Length: 357
Image (cartoon, rainbow, N blue to C red; front, side, top):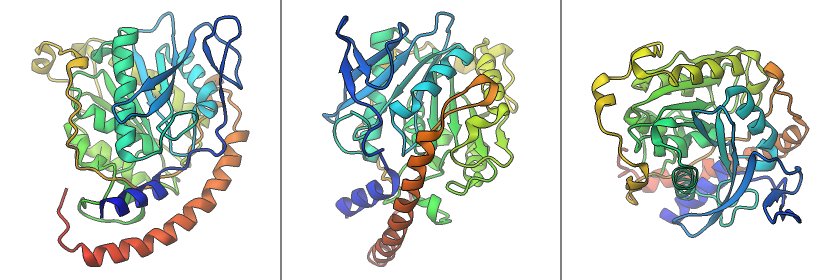
């Protein structure tokens, strides 16, 4: 059943752009890696990072001279770094943060095939690079997960007690819950965020569109309700799954959140509660010493495309590529949903012994 689960998860959750929107090339003068479709920028570095699963993922690090926070961004399931590049640059500028984005295994020019477990290994490798390669501290890092990217984001956040903050952008409760209103977690489900959000100790911002037809806004609302340290959420009226960056409120609210969590904990107000002073007095542990436990009983499911760009607050990024990719993915999703309905029905009959969680 494990193979069936993995296959089902891959069909539902992952739609890497095909062909990838970029190639990796070496700069003739410096030998540095570049994305083929973008000129060299002094503050942008392109990296190839090995993971514990044996794959190699492509990362993109943007340095801001005034930054006191580093944003680790996990994108949606139908985008790659070439499509996210300009948005990442603009976010770094307007939020005044260092930003690290990356492609999951099987996306862009990252090797391997996409899977839930691979995305966990991918984000761990990128996080390790931030610590060891750039000297980032856990307490200065903000994890940002969009759509399916909320899965690896919350999985990592649940194991890092001293994070600065977490942002969930159009997040999912779990893979299965995107398609079916199940009341409990099944063993074959993937990205069980509903169970992990309660383990996150830092401030959590949730952003979701009220007109999202891919991942209903109720997913974001329930995750916000379950979070320990709630920050004022942003429910974007009329926003759908792929256009939240168009809304002026998006960048304004996100900037306000970053400024808030950069303050000392005693001076923050996160809309619901302040961080426990006792927790802040705990000696920070080195994040590199964190044990990325191999025993994680999680399996995976679908979500849908997303191609971020932004016109709000001077975030002017072209959405031409995004719209073309989104149309092709719509067809894939409909076919996948029909085939998986059939597989799930057969699976349920043979798996009435399903465990919760």
